[in-house]
Image (tube, rainbow, N blue to C red; front, side, top):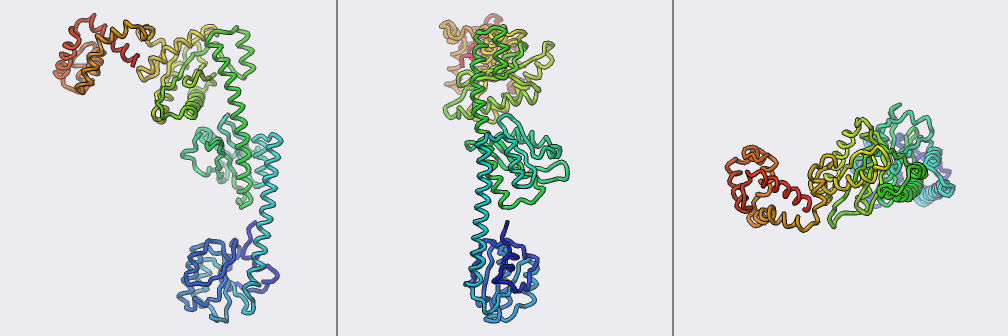
Length: 531
């Protein structure tokens, strides 16, 4: 509880002191006592001071008015004045201004020494600090007991609610759960606000308060940080004004909640390792139907035999923050599919650059399009928001049985390789010739093939700063139509003819020859896969 001007007036040694102005500020908080001993002393007022003076340096009314203005701006608590020594009375202008600013002006008796005034006040302030420290320690002990007893979010919320006498909501971002105490207040909360908090894993753009949907009660939001990362929030719904002791309780609650969330993270990491091992067995085909059913139950997975396998592979440069961004992508993909497709997926990690997703699908294909659209959207958002990063996403053919999962994984892996080359999400069923070409990449014949059909153009572009390869690719994919190629590249068709004549000289054949055009098409695809 704050020590106020009213408390000063109630001290035994100070009873009978008059408040001559600013009585509306009698409940102003007091944290310090200071003596005004210089004309510019007001500059050093820090706020919440009870200032005492003889007005020796402020004898004129104009100086006294300026003093009142300065003290009010610096949030002083009150001004104690010893009259009948250098100043006999205060003008009506001074009294009116003190009333305007709710700054109590207190008449100090002439015979009262400063030490008789200051010592009792300082003793009370120190006593208040001791009481505050004792209460703070009691709060700390209550939360420590929660930790030692394995306190969950619900008990932390209940304890904090009891200490602050306000409803409390705790949100954790690891498993995306929230608890509110007392229970009934859950009905007062806008669930969209909680979902918004659960999605803001980095805390960016977060408002420091939300509103309840009943009575518009302010909910003050305090982040819970674990290893310098926001992993949850404490929301205190202010049905009763928050005091200093309440803020101490909130700080202790966020610390205890952070410890609980850290435990959740560690448990999740252990469980994820079990899932990763299980997924590796699945993609290798080392399982029986009964094993899959029992093992998935043991580790809390709902793995449907009707699943499509998708891979997300990350290609990063040396500046990429491997661990943090990799696990951010992991959680982002899982949450994105759950939110957009309303599906719980099985997700695992292979090595340090590949995320494996087993996504349930309906046999009629009703949700397949939505799943693929979501993966395309997620990949675009991730590559746009994470610098120095390329994400390949490959999707295998849907499975109807567990036995098909290893084959679907191989298909997704091939599609992922093509995705890295083409810089787009690739479905195995849509790869066409790429699914064959990918198997040939490491052969010497392919190098020779590219040396004849593609490398001369690449070398020419490099040496002459031209765009022959882009022109050739567009021409081939435009069915060797000059005007269509010119339209796509926004240049005149005669420029296209000129560029293609250079290409034909470099390659030594006519691009209108269908057989040679097919060879070039394969060469372009192989070059993109290898590079």
